[in-house]
Amino acid sequence: MDSSTPQNYLAVIKVVGIGGGGVNAVNRMIEEGLRGVEFIAINTDAQALLMSDADVKLDVGRELTRGLGAGANPDVGRQAAEDHHEEIEEVLKGADMVFVTAGEGGGTGTGGAPVVARIARSLGALTIGVVTRPFTFEGRRRSNQAENGIETLRDEVDTLIVIPNDRLLSISDRNVSMLDAFKSADQVLLSGVQGITDLITTPGLINLDFADVKSVMQGAGSALMGIGSAQGEDRAVKAAELAIASPLLEASIDGAHGVLLSIQGGSDLGLFEINEAARLVQEVAHPEANIIFGAVIDDALGDQARVTVIAAGFDSVSPETNANNTNAAAQQAATTRAAFGSGAAQPAGVGRSPQRGGAPAFAQPSAQQKWSQPAANDDVPDDAGFDVDLPAEAETGAPAGAARKDALDFPDFLK
Image 1 (tube, one colour):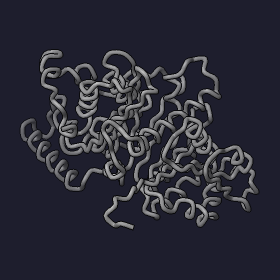
Image 2 (cartoon, rainbow, N blue to C red):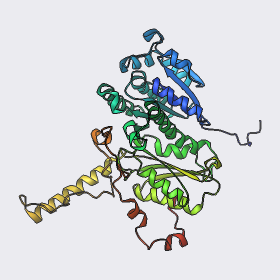
Image 3 (cartoon, rainbow, N blue to C red):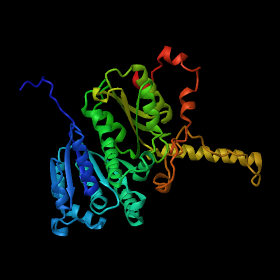
Image 4 (cartoon, rainbow, N blue to C red):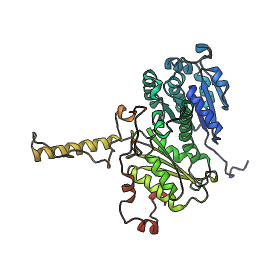
């Protein structure tokens, strides 16, 4: 064989659905024709596993549960996965990227997902968790188990995307059936995985490779995902606005140090609208953010533009940055005390660190802030979880239209 001949090395991507929710999500991805990945279904429920069309099916806990499921007990799910450690390791070997998807709150997915993620990471794969938090109507016990499972999984993955099912209620019809509600959750899990894999596996107008994605997601910690789609004039910009103000976001993406931006549209998708959509996301992220951008042409979308934004890097603030912020805060406090006296009242805003510069205010939120969930019947406003006035942000600067449209001032990462 001629050593000078270029070889076609493709990233090996495996999607693991574990537990009932995870396997259902994998089935939905297969139905929707997600390309370029290998599907693996893992469950303690042998009957449910038989109904999956996954490439690989692994029945864990055969001795422990006799194929009858984990009974919503995460300890049983964890033990079942650990008992079949070698089998799981065998099916994950060779993967460059592994997605672990599950519905948190049950037994097999909640307990087994961290075990699968730990094995995948030990094999050197970029490991991404994409899980759902249960609906409020599923009960407090399931909710508590989900919180514990999420925290455990966070320690075992490079990046964790948590999708709060309750937020789906705000974008669903009031007459939606329970079956359709759970299908919507599966669809969002699909979007999270597809938004990343399509950037790597689908030839695009602006191509990305595995190393690009890895640069954002390796060791990134918590991540947020927003999805938007729009039609007609300025469709890409409108889709980007919807994505970064998505009800699925549990907090603002303001201050993200890493952003994956995927824009999909028909062959008539314009350069200017791509530029404006990318600029909108760039303005919201941290000024020094690593923004990985890809544009994929899919004529099946017709007049529709679809934008997926995955923001990460909120947890990865360097010790030096924290030290600098601490010193600055101490100096500011000392100056304030000197000016007002130790007992004097301070004017509003004194002593507050700016939202941008150094570590963002969102960089190290409490667990309660990151995973707070609204009541199922709360009305979620259109800009839920987003504390920036989008129109004002997008229009700041020159008079409307003029300079932007003539100059096409591209962001640095598009030059």
